Amino acid sequence: MSSQMHSNVIQPLLALKKEQSTNREHLVAEVTRLDKGLERGRSDLLKAKTRYFKLCKDYETNTANLQKAEKDPTTMKPKELIKLRTTVQTLKKDSEQAHAQYQQNIKDFQAYQKKYEEGIRKVLQEFQAMEEKRMQKLKEAEEKMCQGFEALVANLQQAAQALRKSVEAMDYASDIQGFIIANKTGLVPEAPVEYEPYISQLTGQPAHQADKIVNFSSSAPSKKNKKTTGLKIIGKKSKKKKDDTPPVSPVPHVQQSNARDRSESDDTSHSKENHHASLETKPLGDHNTKSMIRAKALYDYIAADDTEISFKTDDIITVTRNDDSIPGWLEGELNGKRGLFPGNYVEILNKNRKCVVLFDFIAENGDELTIKEGEELIIESENEGWCTGRNKDGKTGLFPRNYVEER
Image (cartoon, rainbow, N blue to C red):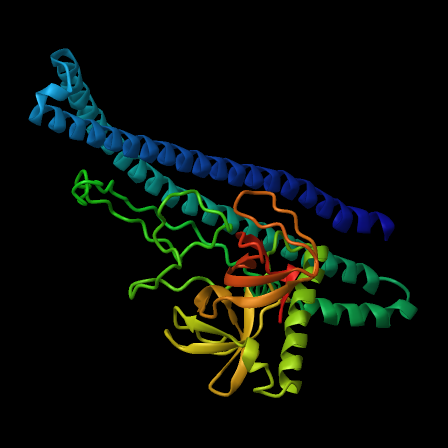
């Protein structure tokens, strides 16, 4: 019995573990390679844009000086005038070349964005295939264990039959799909960049006409870090357009579905159920109207279950909870119903809300604001867990939303 269990169950599972460890390392390396390529393309694009803008400005400045000197020759010596004409011609040629390079960098980066999304999709599919294979092998191993238990003496027969029923009830395909639905990461490809022309400070017109750029349409507007790179990104949530694609609802992040991850997934699910229980026991309309936060819907949203609320574009939602207890989600009330909804589907309308600091926060970057416990602040805007606000000295910057409490 022991030798059969080792050869039929333990050895195959150990071999599978070794195989999947190698495959997992390969897939992680592929994701790292794709990420480095994306960062490199973004850096090249920013350099090309900076160079193009600088040359355009230099050309514009020197052209204005040349026109002034030609109108009044007494302001400049002949040799200096000749030298200035040469400089203007050189800057014009250089700015045109920089303009062409800038547009080419945009096209190259858009092409890589498409390649990046395809690569990430392939990696995720391979991870799913690995997990399905692991679940299938586990089921086969359990089947063989059952066969071994059935061969034991009569006093183990009842236990073996109970275990067989549990094994036969396993449905790895349904389990995998349910796990995926409950633990989708919500990650989407970064939105494509768009051409931004240099606007002349004298004429108010673009310095050059852009070639037509075919924008690669990703599945949703991108939700990135609180800081930006300075590039103008299509799909930023500053203003809603009619043709905007709704973002993907945020969900808890999942790496791999091993025993520990499954436990963490269950904890997240239980937290949402507990949150729903609190909605059922808490009466509607009990929030303080003086500190009421309102949000305007940027996209249509259909509730996935009875813990959520549905809304249409431009609906005004009363936010009743915004404490990051479920990251990326808010609690609100609309048309007499209260429930959860994704924070990246709305825009907070309330400005200049008062709050008090709960914990000290030391600024690490120039756009952040150092705050002290007990200090009173004014919240001017809020986005993805960060607030922009000012202190009593008039200093403005970013600080974590969960470090303060509204008054």
